[in-house]
Every structure is written in C-alpha cells, then in structure tokens.
Amino acid sequence: MSGECGSLIWYIVKRLLQFIPVVLLVLILVFTISKLAPGDPVTTILGFANTPEKHAQMTADLGLDRPFLVQLWDYIRNIIFHFDFGRSYQTNIPVTMELASRFPITLRLGMSSVLIVIIIGIPLGVLSAVRQYSVLDISLTSTALIFAAIPGFVLALILLMIFAAHLGWLPVTGGGPGIKGWILPIASSSMYGSAILTRMTRTTMLEVIRQDYIRTAKSKGLRDNAIIRKHALKNSLIPVITIVGGHMAFIIAGSIIVETIFAIPGVGMYLVSGIQNRDYPIINGVVILVSVSICAINLLVDISYAFIDPRIKSKYTSVRKKRKNTAFAVKGKTGLEV
Image (cartoon, rainbow, N blue to C red; front, side, top):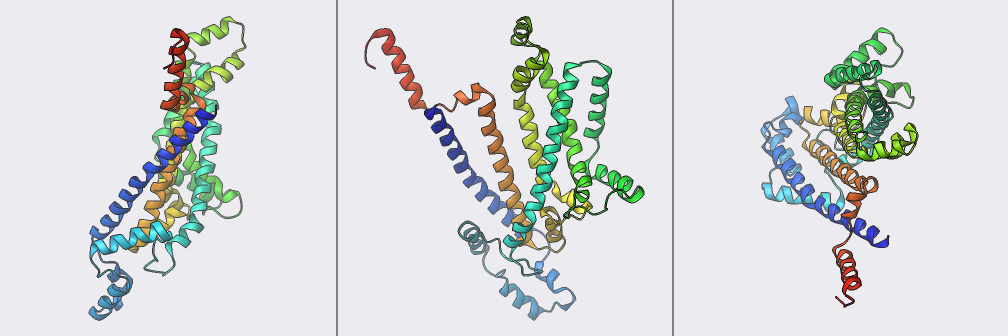
C-alpha cells in the first residue's frame, strides 16, 4: 500500500515538474504576442494629451524603451521570484492585487456551475440510460440536445430578458452577497455542461450495462439499484470526469462572456477592461493565471482516474516494485535467488 502511495506521489511530482516548461512557454508566448500586437499603450494612456515629449517620458517610465529580451527576462523573473505581474498602465494598481481579489469570484462561479452540472447531468444521464427508448429517455435526450446547441452568451441573454427584464424576479447584474445575483450567471454557465454530461453519462452507462459482469450480477439476484450504483456507475465515470474537468476549464477560460453580460467583477471582466485599454500587464496576468488553472484542473482529473479505475492505479506501481514482485515469483518457482 505504501509503495502504491509513493508511486502516486511520485507521479504527481513528475506532473508538477512538467508544468514548468508549459508555464514558461506560456509566459514567453503571451509577452511576445502582447509586444507584437498593433497599437501603442502609451498613446492609449495619454489620449488627447499625447505629445512627443510626454510620449517619450512615459515610454521610459514604463520601461518600454528597453530591448525586448531585457523586458522579457525582467517580466519572467518578477513573476517567478516575486509573483509580480506588474502594474496596470491605467490605474497603477498591482495586477497581482487585482487578481487576488477577483479570482475567488470567478472560482466561485466556476465551482458552483460545476456542482450544478454534476447534480443535474449524472442522475439524468443514468435515468435516461436505464429507461432507454422510453418517453422519459426521448424527452431528456431532446432537451439535452437543445441546450447543447444554444451558445452560452445567447442563453445568458435569453435568461436575462425573461427573468430580469420582463418578469423582474432576479437582478440584472450578477454577483453580490445575496444568492439571487448568482442564479442567472450560474444557470447560464451550467446548462450547456449539464446537457453534455447528461448525454455522455447516458452513452457510457449504456455501454457498461451491456457488459457480461452486469449480466452476472443480475443472475446472482442483486437489485437493479445496487447494480447501477456499485458496478455500472463507477465503471462509467472515467469519461464523465473528463467532461466535468473540461467544463471547469471551459468556465474559467470562458468567464469573460458571462461576467461581461452580468457585470460580475471577476477575472473575465478584468480581462475585458485590459483589452479595451491595451493594458498589457492585465492581459498577460489574466492569461497566465487561466493557463495555470487549466493545467491544475487537468492534473486533478488525471489523478482522480487512479481512485476510480484500478487498472490505471496499477500503472503507478514503481518499476522497482514490479521487478521485486517478478523476482519473488521466479524464486518461488525455481527456488533460486534472482
């Protein structure tokens, strides 16, 4: 048991070490693209007060007159050693401070949406599979197909017009301390994922319940609920977890749409303000944070596979332990030391 835990820990460490080149590549690409993008941030900051003297002075103050490689090295060094993404060109507020206050809001929206996706998608998918070709199955499948075909921003606008503008049941803006401000943003973020998860759960459940071991369990007299809960559902969770992890990454990366529509002061809306003002420290900081978050989600998804499927968990066994087991097996058969 301890050997398996050690192997799993070593696997996690190796995956974390693989983050380093990915993050460095993201840093280099994001910084390079921001430098190659058309437009001048100094001109945007000065506006109508722009003069050659002021332009040159502000360019020097922001360090934009230095060579590209020098700027890139200072940027990477400040992030790695000081976790400093620089200061906003417009407000002069540290980007790290803004991200620290805004990312929990985006994370709250994402985690709540994923929770709703799991609560809705998995039970409906299982119910649709066990009642295949029934009226309930056809209704759930058709509804899931409709919600999967509607873009997120269209659904958000529809919900906003119906429940906020027309009926007046919910506020127009999202977020806030009350629960009402989160209903429409969470619903907009979770409907698409719920539809996809329902269809995926149904498909995987249909594949699993047709396996031989399910027939064997039925022949032993086990109840249908026990078979579905203990055998079928557990063995169909691998693609389901993949969908959930991908949806979590999609919500964090696509929060710009929902947060802009509902005026939620999260990372997405912060990115929009940075793009509008050509505020490159904001753009770079948000993109890097989202990239690292997606890498972390993918790692958690990969690790969760080991706790669900014993076949994947066996792959974490160290090579040394496998050789040791082989040596004992050979010794047991021949009586010789290996």
